[in-house]
Length: 499
Picture 1 (cartoon, rainbow, N blue to C red):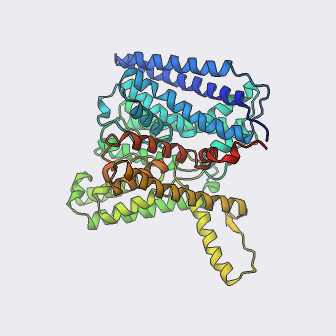
Picture 2: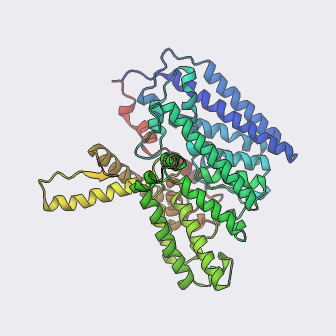
């Protein structure tokens, strides 16, 4: 592989900034409607971002429009950093978050769909800023990279290398042979589901503003809410929470399966091993937690469960357990109840769920369920091979043999993921967090989850972290969202070596 095509990299970053600026302009009318002083900060941020994007785009005309793997990895990583550094401008220019560290943390938490926040009084924020905050989720959810792939052919640029670097999960299933058509179909599904959820939430009793913000945060598995108490604000409106539960379930599923479901091919959905583990696993864990809440919960239950009557208590326990399990598994991060106030055993279950993640090909973060399935199958095969050392038994997933390369890749991913988690937990204690909080912040940031344990529990913000801890958590959010290898490969000497 020859030298890097830097012009194509900068040109792509220009496109990313231009699109980001256009989304900022969408937040401007919300501020104008509510006559907020923040409107000029949002507008100016949009103009500055557009200027940056246009300068990068027009002054970097490449001789070759071919994107190699090296350029793909750089474009994706630098693209997310471009989003984050320009995306924090509305906060800074409006002076709603005047501190650069806090503004960057809130922004990358949005784009990485983590949902951790440094805001202690969300409801005091201007509406235009709250919309922009939710929009960062929505942009990051499917990945603005994928959106840009859909328009790259207009510029004479192929996008396959970018899709492989950006696509969530260990594989990038395609709906159509042409990568651009795949991107368009994925985004069409994403937009339609967001609009449907918005309408349902409005009908269920949310204001139109809260409905659009929560719809964007749900489909992106982000978790930013417009309320200080998150979705717990709607504990007296169960239908609202059931709608969010349903769409969290969809958002955490492989979008290819969602496409098949919309086409009426439900058999394909339930033929998927990963979906069956995801769907039934969620139901089983939720049932266990609901059982513990109903029969073994201490009096603190009344702080999070809203109906004292036995029938209401059962329904409420089922709803909250299902809501919080899906919120953590899909890495959405919405909060209907503080699970750390439930039984200690339940807190342990939720901490274990921090390391699951949703389906590959979804907007969720984390390790992903398919990786766990393949690792478990490979482990059982090792037992068989111990008894029959000469047997050739492949790992099978969905009835197909999984190549050794993919198995080794998944094992490497898991080992690196856990090593980063352990080292990050120790490093965060150096930055002033107690051990329990350090474990929670590391697992939450790396898995793009949001609520954690300790001083960063579901009812607390990350505002009390030191600046160093916030920058470190921001780095964990980035590498977690881009599946480790995409970012970490940039730190290897052989990546920069000319072949």
